[in-house]
Amino acid sequence: MKVQITSIPVQDQERALRFYTETLGFVKKVDVPLSQHGRWLTVVSKEEQTGIEILLEPAPNHFEPAKIYQKALFDAGIPYTQFSSDHVQQDYERLIKLGVEFSVKPTEMGTVKIAVFNDTCGNNIQIVEML
Amino acid sequence: MTHYYRQVSKLVNDCYPNKGQLDTIIGTRHYINNHLNKELKLDFLSKVRFISKFHLLRLFKKYYGQTPKQYIIDKRIEQAKLLLQGGKTVTDTCFEVGFDTPSSFSTLFKSRVGLTPNEFRKRAIFTKSDCLAFKNFAVLNVKPK
Image (cartoon, chains in turn yellow, cyan):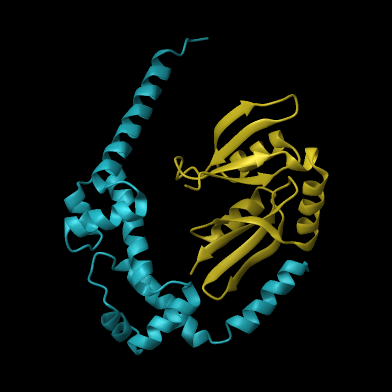
């Protein structure tokens, strides 16, 4: 078995696509309409376009427990997932200029530096740089 | 302040109180990253940071969750993938990332990546030329407005 896809629950797929591509810099990989209200929509890292895909799945809109879980994590400030960064401080400054809100500013935590931002689709996302 | 941030602050205080140890281990990792093509034995790394090799081994595992040897292999494989994707030969790649022989490199690469370096290189080159052909096709078939 191989890890090919991981998913992030999003409240609005179109807005999520804009945020993950235009703001974060990911690239759209697969976009298949599945129903009137949902698409199989994945993005990949620009530097690794054959790498792991992130499925932007509209679970919170169709499954109440997913919505409750997502909100509980968000309210506690807990990241839904994390991405690696070569330079957290630089990414923080770039994203702040684009209007992204951070709940944790760049913070050293032992051998890593982390920061946490709001993805505007119901999730906190952590970026991590190995020191 | 969020619940998560409070937990992070607590972990920083509980798990990483020794700044000296952290500096040593982070310095070792940077040294490894900058000298991947050199021979990187534990004996040598411990001398670079003025620390006993057993202590270095314990600390590296404690802070990075891997032994230095595991970390070095992962970094070398990661670097080798980039070089092969860029079109370097298997032999050149092998020595450039610090492996001793092409055969040991190939065996290790296959066990980690699932393809031999040669297969990986061919596939990367094929994908690249495929993309290029597709782009050329798209450019040639765009009708002016």
